[in-house]
Every structure is written in structure tokens, then in C-alpha cells.
Image (cartoon, rainbow, N blue to C red; front, side, top):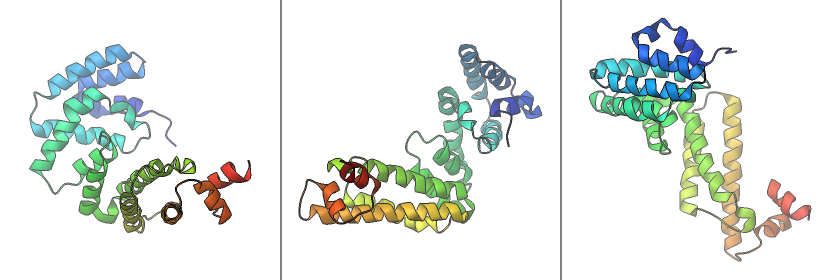
Length: 234
């Protein structure tokens, strides 16, 4: 069990002395001196961008080695660093070595700015079943979209299209068999079945009426939790 934060661990890493301004940023951030820390970080970004690509890439590799291992890694992914150093390096890296999966994995998992799925799918295409974290995140991305589609369905409000959600469910079904953790795979499978059934029921309901989906489900003993909440408990 990790007892130290990512900041504390990186400060103690001998390698941090190769990046004195970044180390100083970590120290000040760890002390809660946010404004001072950001000033130092800006100086680090300016200094780093004077370096050759290989030196900048070396820093990014070192950084993400920690971010991938620490649950609090997102604390280091602040806008000036992401925008000023990480994104430019990862994009240049894609062009210089398009066979390396890391730029796609890291953009898909950590610095995607809301558009991670294309990077995740590319990382999966390149890395296959070795990319377990990517595979699970692909499923979570699809599930998040499905949740949004249906989160007002008890009010007869569906916020997507059949085609889009069918593609999302198919996307989950295509990759979930690659998940090595059987408990995770089982949970993903159950949730995929849930959304597939919900989409099917909504389509059937829409063929005959447009209002009263909760009652329609209740009359047919559909075991959705929100049916019990909104209908049986009234």
C-alpha cells in the first residue's frame, strides 16, 4: 500500500535532480504553495522547451513512469505542463516513431482533453491484450456515454441514437473478452447486457408509444432499479 504521494516520491528520486526547477515545483506544490509552484513550473516549461526532442521525451517518460503507478498522478497533470511540454512531445513522438504505443496510451488515459477514445483504440490496435488498462478504459468510456444516453430515460427522455449506442455496446463486447481480470470482465459483461437490454426495450416501447416508459417496464416486470423507485414505490 502506497503511503507516500507521487510528489513526495518524485522529490526523493535521485533523477529529480536532473530537473531542478521541476523538483522545486514539486516541493512547493507539496508544501501547498500553489502560486509559487506555478511560477516555478512556468520557468521549467520555458527551460525544457529549449532542449532537443530526445531530452524532452526523456523527461516525459520519467514523469509517466510515476503517473502510471500512482493513483494521485493526476495532481501533476496541470495545464501548463500538459500544454507546454507533454502534448508537444507526445505529438512529435507519434511522427518520429509511429510504432511506439506509449504516446497513444498516455494521451488516451491521462491527457486526452475529453477526446481519449481514438487514442485508446489506437493503443489497443498497437499493443493488443498487453494494454489491460487501455482495454478497461475503452469500456469505461463507452459506459460513460451509455449512462449519459439513458440517465433521463425514466422521464421518457433518450439522449442519443440507437445506432450510436448499438456501436458503443458492440465496442464493449468486442474488447471485454481481452480483460484478464475475471471479476472485472464479469462486471463489464453484466453492464453490457444491462444496456443492451435497455436499448432493446426502449426501441420496442417506441414502436407503440412515446410516454410512460417506466410504467411500460413495470407492466412487463422489467427489473430496472429505477422502475422500482419510480413506479412501485409511488
